[in-house]
Image 1 (cartoon, one colour):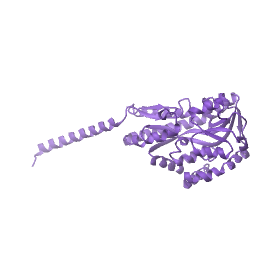
Image 2 (cartoon, one colour):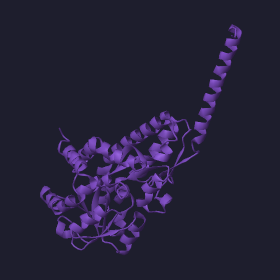
Image 3 (cartoon, one colour):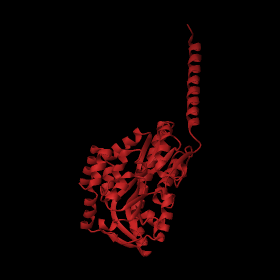
Image 4 (cartoon, helix red, strand yellow):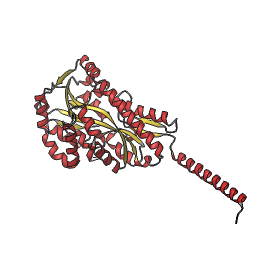
Length: 344
């Protein structure tokens, strides 16, 4: 049997071995981290969308003391300008992270079409009731099942309607108008139901098409209309109809997410939550000034009366019948209930 001295030596060697193994594992784990992670966005820093990504990158770098570095690639440049391919690229690991649009990701995640249902969310409280409630959790679960880990919500805002022809205050006013829409079949159905001629194209192609008159109008948040100076390409009429809102999602490819230890996963998530809250508050607080700037540039702004708004709601009711089964009956009911009870 080993004596006390030998026991002490064996114990000491074991402790050294454990410490060495721990250090080695730590080094291996650290070595798995990339020098830089790609972050995809559609819009750059001039827009609230881009600012949300900027804030996330800033907070992560600060809180990780420079260990985790992220680089933003705006204008969907990582997918050659086709924003509808962003989710698939992230799922496959070609893109590490993104601050993405529920609209652009909806072809791969049908549940995200929830937010594109026309006139589901009448105000900011309705958006919050959905994203921060059970429906929001269900949507996040659907995203994760498809290969991407969602971390937090941001906001692109309510999408308003502009055109170069006339002031729109009734569904009949849309008859025959060519309206640029994003690559979502639900958008095609909504505008077709309203009598318009929806034309799908990426944002990179939209402004040139408006300039040449290839399309008559478009729909986007006020911040996009303002910063992109859409009034300069003949969009003289703007209707505030709040027909749908576009929450943003801070997310990480599942392949990349698994490379981070638990502590850094928590860091990334909390930074995303904080960046999202900051961006939502900032963008909402700037809306009044943004609208005034648009009016000051001579754009005719039409605000719908309750009766006019109801006419659009009734005109798009059939879209729900077609899309609710695709999105999920339970999810749509959850969202509608959250909206109905938002002020309680």
